[in-house]
Length: 205
Image 1: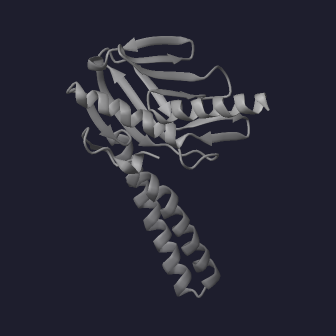
Image 2 (image 1 turned 120 degrees about the vertical axis):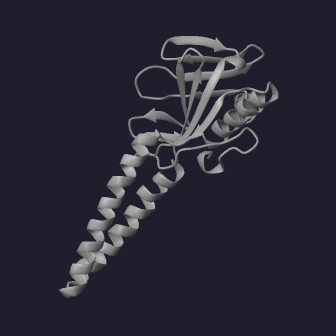
C-alpha cells in the first residue's frame, strides 16, 4: 500500500515536472546517457553526451524548429538552439527506450519549447527564429519531388492509354502515399521565419 502511494506520488511529481516546461529530458540514442535541459535563473542549462554548460538567455542567437520523422516514429520534432559562439544543442520530441521502442514526449517537449520562447520574449531577445530545413537542401528536395511527380504522371498516362488499369491503380495508390509522406514533410519544413508571439503550430506536437 505504501509503495503504491509512493509510486503514485512520484508519478504525479514527474507529471508536474514534465508539464511545467522548465525541464526536459530525453535519450537521443541507445548508446550513452540521456540529455537534460533546464530553464533556470541563469539561463538555459544543458547536459549532452558528457558535456554541460549554461547559456544566458541573451546569448541564444538562433532557434530552428523542424519536423524529422523516422521509420519508428512518424511524429518526431526537432529544435536546434545555437548560441552567439556558434555552439549548438539539439532537442528531439522522442526518447529511446530499447532497440525496438522509441516513444513520443509530446507534452513535455512542447511545454519546454513554448516556455523557452516565452522567456526569450520577456527579455526582448534578438534571436533569429526560423522553421524548416536548410533552404538549399529544401530546393534540391523540391526538384527531386518534381522530377518524381512528372515521371509518375507519365507512367500513369501510359498505363491508361495501353489499358493497364491494374498498373494505373497501383500508381495512383503509390502517388497518394508519396504525396502524404513526402508532401507532408516538405510542407512542414518549408523554410520561413516566425516570431515569439506566433510559434509554428505545425512544428509543435
